[in-house]
Image 1 (cartoon, one colour):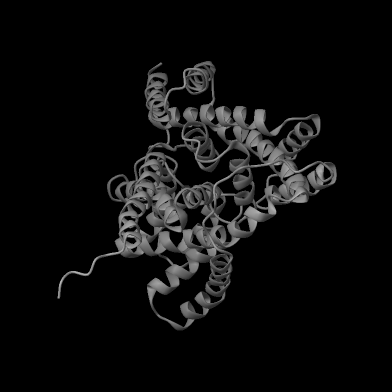
Image 2: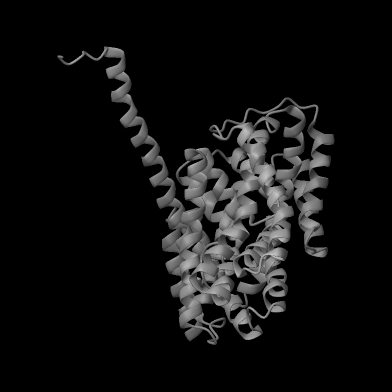
Length: 412
């Protein structure tokens, strides 16, 4: 038999399949490269990470507009888990679908995870907290957060009511610091925003599709709750170290509000009560965690490595981040619709103002108080801020300048 001619329509479909696949692959590769760069250069903790994200994703690449980014930050502040990692996952999903969220998490997390495992092997017991380059990185965080706040304040604090919400939130945050104070303040600001702004016409807030179906969102929320219930049962009946490790780190990731610094005391209780990690090793790892870029939750990888080697590091890391991923995927399909309603936008106006207030409080404590100790520190912070805000230099050059400046200040 001769060759059967292929219809032109079928030929057209075949020609389009490969470019479409290449387009998705290119988008995933782009997300991986950008998130990895952020994972290598984002020093200073979760609040500073949001500044780096804002500069890279919003200002430079324009993957998300200002209001959509602020709304995503507000959502992740309401959810338990590492807020900066959840924001990165959400941006990855918006850019390249569900796989984009996974790739964004891998890129942002892997550099610090590798660094912590390496530090655990090479630098345990050494006091690096007073090193000049560490001090320089803290000053970099001051400049990054101040730069992010400048842009967010200009976009989000557009009237006296929102400025008042931000200032009140900042004041209460500084005076009342508990694990749940930020969540309660954000909820209160949402209620105030609903009351003040609910009669205003909804503002159009363009954003790319979140690429997550409601069915998948519901399945993610169901998986989050099911694991929360079943893992303690499995850990109780199974003698496996891995089941116990996964259960303890999953619960830590599921119940912690306020970011990486809040999870550290909980992890201390979980791993030291079982004798997995000594106090000396825990404190050494805590000091190392402050020195590396990326999410503070990768401290779980350090603890898992001590408890069970490389497999333990992988189990602990996946377990502590999994609740955050399931919650973001579960909530995003409904969040995209809710945020477009006039009533929800009124609440979001108050919430976004509160987020700016919380970031203002964090800029002072702990970022400013832990980094700025004299005139030289203020001068270096001003130079780094100018490099970002006025000279428009890339963040990695600001990080290098901060490290060099911190070493130089140490010699003075």
